[in-house]
Image (cartoon, rainbow, N blue to C red; front, side, top):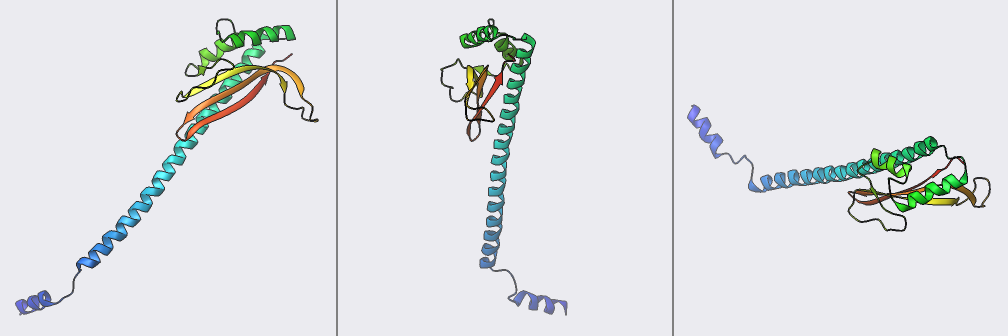
Length: 172
């Protein structure tokens, strides 16, 4: 009796055809490809945000180092400020306490002398420019004269360079 049932089951045409298998595999491949695409996009965004956060932190650190050094130097007259600005322009860390503090605290940073272009493919570069005129006063559209250091930094990221600019005034 059991052999009769088994023969009937074997003769039935119920089962999965090759076309059904191909359709199933195609659906799985499409789902996998779209998931993989989303993962790659998410990874790229995460890398860019990581680079951007690192650049912002390093730029803020550079500003803080320079501001702390200016405060410790106690620059109280414009002649002393002008002298320090000249030392910065020379690019020699032994002549400038500000450059020496930056080199000691952020050794991975590459100093680029004023008037020189940033080099491609260098991870973290900065230049310090003496700037005695800010674009405008908060209350008026007039330029205001302030002694300080204009800082421009360039960071290499996965999606290209990130440029930051800031100004640290002397306490004169």
